[in-house]
Image (cartoon, rainbow, N blue to C red; front, side, top):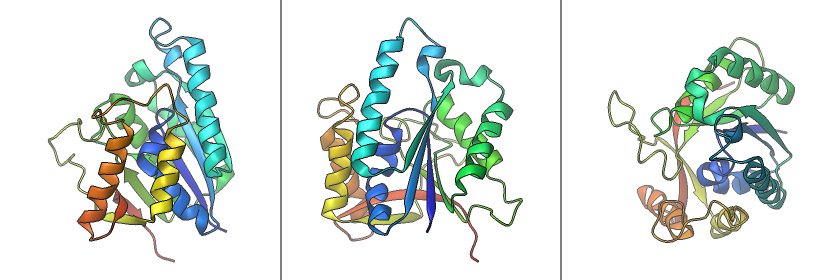
Length: 226
C-alpha cells in the first residue's frame, strides 16, 4: 500500500493542484492524506473571520469525503504573516506528520507561486522531507495552483515548467470538478482562474502538452528509485 501526502497552504489548493491525481491514485488503491497548513483568521481576524474559516474547512471536509481522502489535518499557521513566522516550526510539524503517515509520494506547492505563504510552505516541506532515513519519501512533486502559479514570480528560474504529467480519465476530471464544487465560498465566475471553466481548460491544455485529453502537470523535485 502506497501512502500519499498532499501539503496545501489553504483549503482548495489541494483540489486545484491535485484533484485529478487524487482520483487517479484512489483508483489504484493508494491511501491519500491532506494537510492544510494555514488559518487566515490567525493573521487577519477582520478580513478572515472565524466563521469564514470554519465554513471553508467544512467545505474541504465534504470535498475530501467525496474523493475518499483517508484523513485531513488542519494546522493553525497564520497565512497573512507566514513570512514573519519561524520556518523551523512549520517544518518540525510537517516532519512529525511525515513520520506518522510515512508517505512514499509527496505533493507540495510551487516555489514560484504568487503568495509568500506558498513559497514558505514549499521550503518548509523540503526541509521536513530531507532524505535522511531508510523511509525517505521516494517521489516529491510540486503542483500548479490556479491564480497562484501563473501569477507568480517570473525570474531566477521560478517559472513553472512541468516535467511530470499524470494522464487523467474523463472521470478523473469530472471528480475533480465535482470536488471543487463543494468549495462554494471559493468558486469564481468565468473567466476567473478559479472558475470551473478554467479548471477544465487547464486540464485540457496540460493534456494537449502530451497528446492526451486531460492531464495534471507537475514539477519533479526528487525521485528515488528503489
